[in-house]
Image (cartoon, rainbow, N blue to C red; front, top):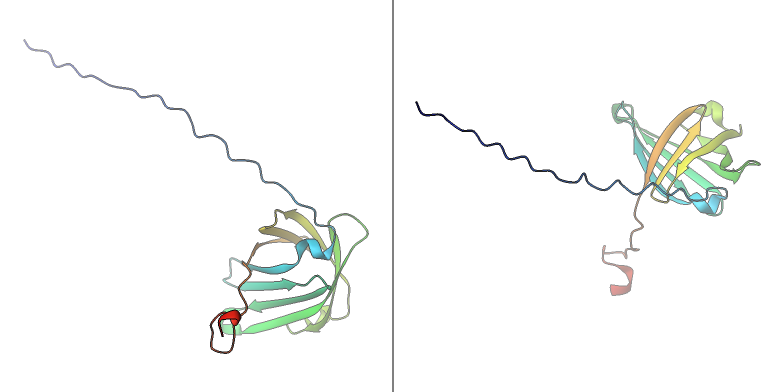
Length: 144
């Protein structure tokens, strides 16, 4: 009677090295978090937040069929680390928030990712890469 031999080869490999830990950056001054940021939520709303070093904050919310709205005002550093006060002067999205200081804290900031908390609701944003200024015809300004 003939036997059948089954040979099983087991290869051992090392697991991939762990990812480098996320490095948190300072987020205590408005200039620390300045830039253009984007986010979205489970309802397919999209958010674009622009923070300028001079303290201007401009938030656009695109709510799909409901349309777009804008919140625009000032952001200043708070008394505690990683906290800010936002006061909107334009409040199309939330009119009752106009002229009412709102507490905003930074839960996480890596430079490219920003997670803020407003009214105990966190929202994570991704930095939008800066684009080269464009001239009238769409070409980079220095080429025109």
